[in-house]
Amino acid sequence: MITLVEVLRGVPQEKRIKVKNLIEEAYDVLDIDNEVILKYCEIYTTLKRRGRAMPDADVLIAATAMARGLTLVTRDRDFERLIDLNLKLELKS
Image 1 (tube, rainbow, N blue to C red):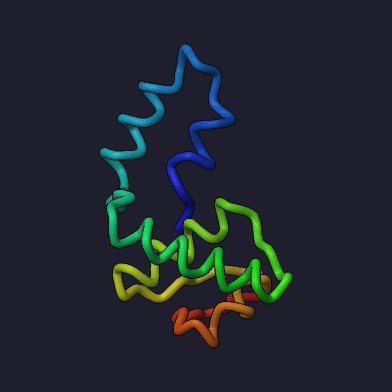
Image 2 (spheres, rainbow, N blue to C red; image 1 turned 180 degrees about the vertical axis):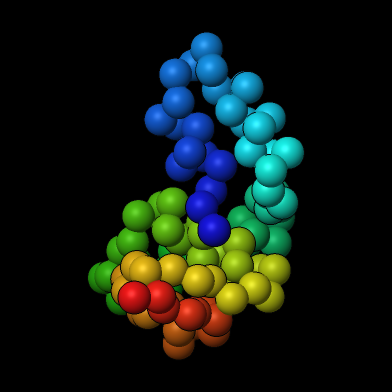
């Protein structure tokens, strides 16, 4: 799962709407709602307290998976630090 923000921020402005529409036609895009925002804040606060910050995009990805009860499938081992926060994680090699 990647966030639409991560994809679209690298797309030239004049192509952004077209790319956004194509992605939304090809994939189920998960919205950021209040449940995701609250989970994001919970993760952010915990990581900050531990002194183990993560990039905002990664926290948002984890929060979305957790709020939706989904398993996050990734190659990024940085997400392992969220397992104790009940992130369901499947690491690919």
